[in-house]
Image (cartoon, rainbow, N blue to C red):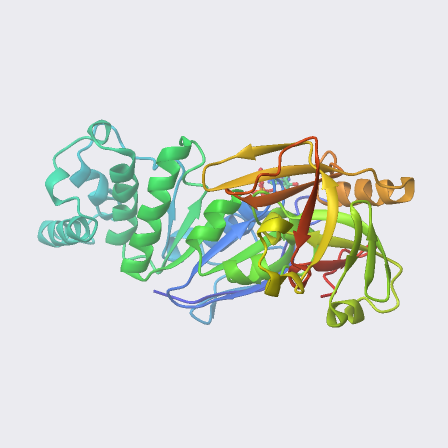
Length: 386
Ligand code: ATP
């Protein structure tokens, strides 16, 4: 196992803007790091630079403190676990796992091969399936065979490039937990690329969010969710997404298109000197005001809104509020959408309501918002001020 250090890594293809632009990350021995971001953000390029499939234009890549920029992939001792597992259909599980050992001709005796394969199979709970062909395995078992190959090589780290992206939602969920359990059991340093924020949030010790080749934030899933450094991370992480509302700010009062909100003094001070901000609130920090206990009311602000409709999910409900921003505020939302690579940011707020709420679409209702939990973003830079 190994630590991996990315030190100001840059990748340029031709004369274009860098696909990877000055990225520095210290990956600890045994750590599980996720690289996440929208299509084209450079996450696969970064992974390929680590494994040695792309040249490094600038910066240093260290494995266990040794600079490996110029080392061939086979000399880096990293194992790539590919999408679709890349198993050989005509070989048994045993031979699929043994494959990397057989490639290194003469390096291992037949006894050594047998020991490595049976040990890996035991770790991965594949002992009973060694004589089967991949076609006769479940998706999860195939994934484990692919990991078995990486294990027998005694690789210093596993690199995963969107291994689950072709699977249906149910299988993805199962595989996610398989990979997470295996990684923890083996304690092997792992880097995992995905564009799926659910995978990112559930798998990694830390998640690195990339945008246009640049690292936006690297933090634990919880910290990303609770303390996103900017609008991009705030909008990318979480489902349903964080709501964004343009607002003017005066003292402790935010004037928004859904009504005036009183915010805590400490938050207001963070936005001192600003006239316009973007307010970010996750859906779960709204509630039907009638269901909020009296002593909690003072932690928030209540406003009146007409929901267009509600969706009942059994354990909770989603409510939708459309708002009509002033023209300059609409322009702000549009520029924000461009920044986030979205077609548009709908002037809509999604709120999560308790399953017991009687609020229904088409009628005015009192909605409470936990103002301690809202974020204020700089309208120009997108930086989280709070
Ligand atoms: P996706 O999720 O779509 O795979 P990604 O985040 O993995 O995207 P990369 O594949 O790393 O993104 O690509 C980053 C940028 O580098 C993109 O703008 C892409 O067009 C560009 N790029 C990638 N490979 C090459 C190449 N071989 N030659 C030129 N440009 C490339």
